Length: 242
Image (cartoon, rainbow, N blue to C red; front, side, top):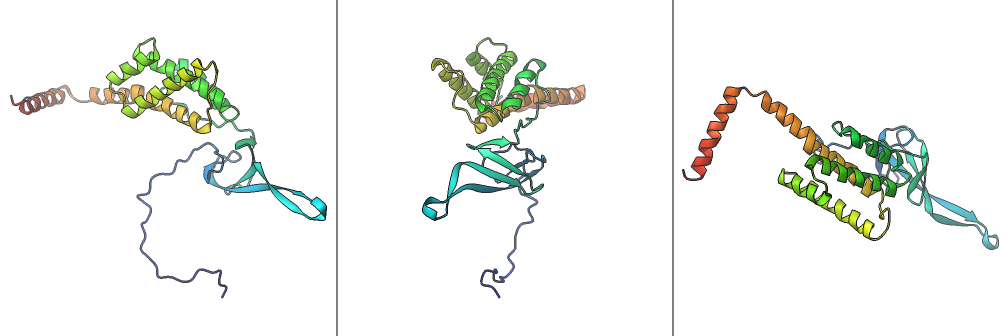
């Protein structure tokens, strides 16, 4: 028997995996990631990475030098290969479609879709568009003309702290770029994905959830709403010592 073969060991108990967190089934191709949605077949699959080498013959000998700026990924679902240059997908040219928030107001759809269309080719340009979208969306939802005032109003309305902090970072970074006299910051694919997530989070909290809660409230019979209000009133009085 070969020494390379694993030795037989006693079976150990293991979890079924039912409690494991769900796998994100749609993810843009990311350099050196082990899994993402294949730019060839679209299937969320494991990716196998291969380094590329240059072969040359100095003084009659053969040497292989690894190329540091180019590599290849292969999808294990369809076996197709993709070429990466300077950590960016170049073949096939990929415009990964980001899921458009269902309740995103119509006036912001163009910026979102344009950012999605160019995110693979120019993350910096996509980030600039998304920052514009985030700022305009917040001003519209808060009814304020300035970004910092809009963030403050959304905080007053109860926006989750995590989203509020993310918005403040977007505002701060935008000011830094503006004061430096530059159109774009040093944005990468990760920054762009975060900005897409911020847009979706704002829409989900400010529009989708509020609408769903309003619909839920409207379905409660008047008598039950009145009874609930009375119970809550008595609970508040008891808590206050009344």
